[in-house]
Image 1 (cartoon, rainbow, N blue to C red):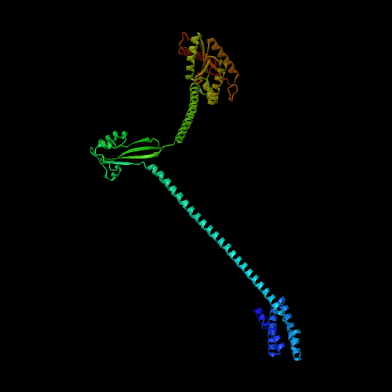
Image 2 (spheres, rainbow, N blue to C red; image 1 turned 180 degrees about the vertical axis):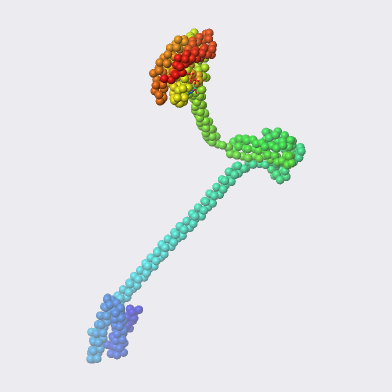
Length: 487
Ligand SMILES: Nc1nc2c(ncn2[C@@H]2O[C@H](COP(=O)(O)OP(=O)(O)OP(=O)(O)O)[C@@H](O)[C@H]2O)c(=O)[nH]1
């Protein structure tokens, strides 16, 4: 606005024009107009310079306007002093108007800055648009992401629903598989006439219901017909079931027949067919191998039990044949061994030496030192006799009861037995009874000996003879010892 105003004040019809008219016509009105225009222009420029002290074009214009003021003042002085107007005009006023050139430059500059401002505002505008675009894009992306997240959420929910549905479906499928095979045929029996239950009419799908017993029975599997007919006729309860493998299916059909009774009569028969999953081959194999393992385990246990029982039996047999205190044969064991020894001797045509032994006054040992010491005396005698017989061969030592022992010597006679008795006495004479408080006490024995010839003798009789010989000797010893046998 200032530049336009200056152009008006200084341009065509402005200061130069009025100055020229004043000089050439000496017209004060033109001079005053020129002065007003020049003053206004100076005021304007000064105002610009106050706002923009360093304004290059305003400064140039200010200098030019100062020169104009000088021209006007000089022209006025010359004109008033009567100088020739044309000369003054030629000298002072020229057609040249440097102020206009300055204004032009100023204007160009302003134009330029306006353009720049416009340019930068365009740039800013562009930037703003760009930012808006970026923001919009981001916003749009966010929206898209949010939408995708929501889509995924709902997709996930749908998947879960689907999964639940599939689960339900699978459950119901297995239920269906278990129960789909159930078919119920119901018949009402009325004596020999069978009529179909009306509520189950649909099962026959339009076929005429069976009206006779035979026709109705024909609907059941062959193996049920006979028992069903019998039960229907006899009006008794039937509880029967059969299972069939369904060919080409992994299923077994379990068919049951159940009578519905009323007042002791069969009202109707209900046949239930239940399809059950058949064990897979692998499961069957597994079950079989488990069964085999269990059986093998049981057989192993049985075997080891049997072995133990056999050992126990042998031990028991041994125990049954032995005297637990002295480990010599008891009466039972001795009898068995004697029989086999007699047979052997008979085969070999040999005789046996029999020796019966008894402790003298054994009762006194028990009474004086107690039963435990008495036991030790019995063991000492048994060990002595065992030590004198041949461990390998047919010799036998047995305890017939109490303090009475018997010795059988294979391939021997009574004199062998007598020698054994002497040796036993000699050894016992050297040996105190174990743990006996009186170390001078010795086990003293009496003995009776005989020869057993299996070819002619009866063993029982021979043993009685030996016993008699023993008691004879006992009597002699008692007599000699005067009743004092414990030394
Ligand atoms: N310590 C002990 N004593 C026994 C056992 N069996 C029997 N007796 C005892 O042995 C004694 C046998 O006595 P008898 O044979 O009648 O008499 P004895 O004192 O030996 O007299 P004689 O034979 O006539 O010399 C009894 O007192 C029985 O109680 C036993 O296993 N251990």
